[in-house]
Length: 213
Image (cartoon, rainbow, N blue to C red; front, side, top):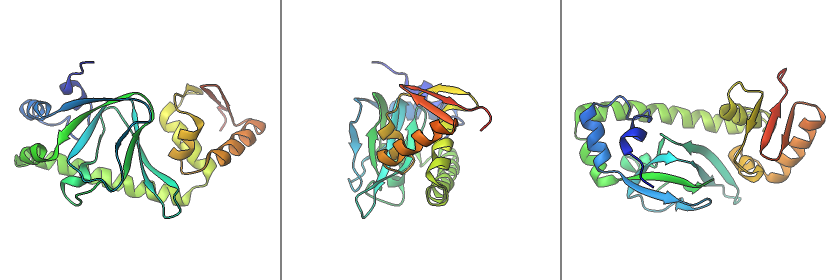
């Protein structure tokens, strides 16, 4: 499948404000990789040779707790980059990246990307957006530790659905449980209670919200 890297670069908050010349320079180093569902792109602790730009699909980034539980940091979607921490602070990836559905990414080799950062305008735009992402990750850690499972579920679903009263969801309940930092069993009990309370109904791949909630 051919995907024009420029079209994805122009969706990316990190890159959309770059000059046309710098967008072309970035596109020149992009290598497309197609991925199947549940395919691991890299593991936590792997040596980092590249950062990635999601072209389509969704990719879960998670860490493993000392107890062996997966803690989801973020679900990456089209136009978002990930793995960029290896450019500055770490030689190894601090998270595992695994696809939640059939996906594709552009690989941006570390050495070639560092050459692009020698351009002062490119570097300025990239660093500003990197700081914004760091703030998001700090907020995500606070969110996982400060909100109960029900609040995390509604926040996650509303991020996907916006203000819609119903949505189609392509993720499994196990994937959603992982995304909100809980177990499938806990999520199943929560969904049963929410259905009884008429707050939310999840049937098949369709979720219906109570508009009064």
